[in-house]
Length: 287
Length: 256
Image 1 (tube, rainbow over the protein chains, first blue to last red):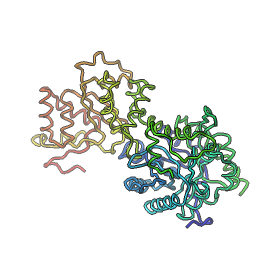
Image 2 (tube, each protein chain N blue to C red):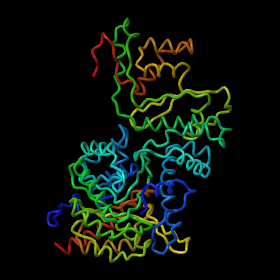
Image 3 (cartoon, chains in turn brown, red):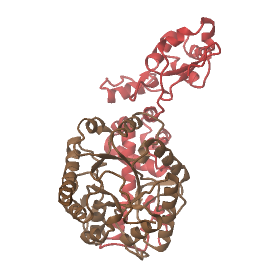
Image 4 (cartoon, chains in turn yellow, purple):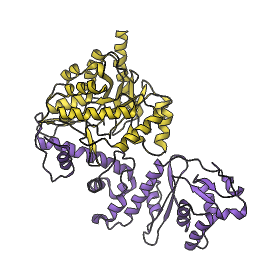
């Protein structure tokens, strides 16, 4: 069971970035404000080679957040035991500071759909996802963080809000939450919600990590759709929402996610610096 | 209720209608569902094109993007680990009528897959170059050489090494495709796989060693292809590229 007063934030309350192989040397030579790194677990499940060697080197310097994409925690089927075992062996040597996954499903009948697909927020989904989180936490022997998804549609059968759903999941399993502010904004624009209300109502005491990323505006239809593609700078609206969250929740580990059209290190570290400024400014006020 | 089975089916089959009972914040269900239809395919397409850079250049980026969508529908991934996704590309290309005029494409794809497999293969420590001379002369032929997991071989009826080098190393394109087959050895000194053109008989020699045959057995297979196969030169090349990681022989204490 979660206890708001004892929930331990696993990573430094400072900026981190999603690690990309081409930034390896830059991260070591000029880390700037970057204090931790996040990796996608599935990219480090090979037998050997450069990716693993780089990660082994970096784990000595930075706390590592292990972020899974492929567990399909929201799937109707049982969790893939092979994949759980691979995560367990990755954890055994990497000893990450944190493990996180998504409130989504991504596999069906043995086929990997390579996307984070939406779920109806109902009691039966709640039961299933709780069971899966319990299983992951038992296997990895850690408290995990669950991330709010970016979504493009809702289900008629949904009976509770995303925040009610996530809060109840955390209560049942003891897991923490990863608040992706870009996902909040993307989902609210796409589904007619209010992002400001969402971040105000979110259970701040359960946040173990924040994600900031870029989105694309698809205006070629009757209504504007935002696509969560992690291929650009964080938008000004998302920066403002982030500042509001930090004012309400205090400094938190904050990741800049940039997974496609990956920029030079200077561009990425500048985004981290901007996050650090917002985190640090508040620290000065609260100290 | 929209179960995941109909949702997944509609995602993968463009002929399937958008599932019912989805609600939207004002958008049209078809448009919003199509975002999910595109997302997975677009991500996998990017991965495949990154795994097959020379194939992509040969086909042209635009054409390749539509070709890989056909591949994804026929050979969807069965695991969330996509570091070597695309293993069926040679078979797919060989059976894909629109590219049948380019019969070397499946071998180019096989070569790029082998480079990828080498890149992700288990790390290993090579033996010292002197180790072979430490084996008594009468025992050399019965020794077995353990080949590094990163070593790959490909045999082809086409000049795939020249084609690959012309795209990745600015070498000239081959002047003729016919009667110009090339066999390739992929080695990885540290982390970067490098394709080398094998001498005649070299493919048979290295694959025999990979099957744990003795040096003399492997040599016989190479000589069956090419009488003048130069054993010393071949061993020198394998040692120079860190391709031998152990030598096993009765007279020799196991080295590790």
